[in-house]
Image (cartoon, rainbow, N blue to C red; front, side, top):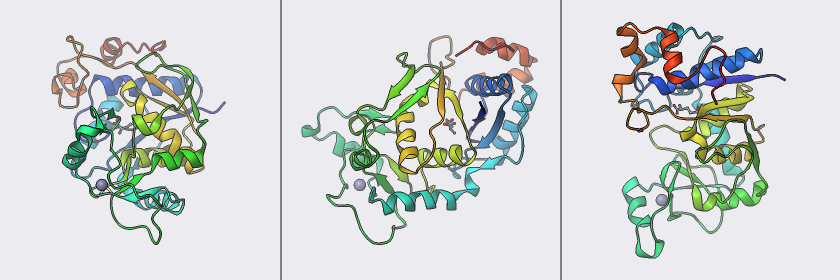
Length: 291
Ligand code: GLU
Ligand code: ZN
């Protein structure tokens, strides 16, 4: 079986222990399977991405002993590809423009008749304010676009599944059925003003075009997987296997964030720790049995 995986950090801050865990686990699993480990740079958000952080990513991963084939893909160089995917979805009548701000969405979702706002993978579940009753016609506008998820499910069929070889936050494993997407994720944004495409759209295009067979990443992204699998079906892509691993937490049980410079790999390096120390700290032994 071919095994192609990737580590796709955003160059918006230093890599911390959680990143080291994902990267080493993906690298080791590819190595064990005789497969390929790719590094990709998720620099879609150009306002927050910095060349210094990208340079630090290469440096930290090399220090950890990881190797990857070049050239390294950058999302900022693939915007035309994402536009093509959007055009494909637009032609299917699945997208509609929406310029609602986060504040608008918060206000609409908090209206008394809406009940308590639901939280999805992108924050508050969009309440459908701008969703048209008929698919918009004409050329795709250069505007923020959302996916009409109910319509998308009707087209894709609601018998959508993926294989989880790790576990979701509630222990979900094996064959996972997508479930109640309109309620749990809502009409997700696929094109944004600032970035052209959203993370969800870009990542499925990148994974498909790079022939990724196994996606290995933290459990925080488990809820987003349903969106990715739906998009893969709509765009005629093969769904990879997913392996979500547990999150690295600090002593108080809080998830590590990028701003947590204290746990940056660079900080540990400066303090004289070794790659073997980092492996021990995140529980990825050279012969990883970590999930
Ligand atoms: N750039 C994303 C992140 O840093 C990658 C997500 C993924 O691996 O799918 O979380
Ligand atoms: Zn709107």
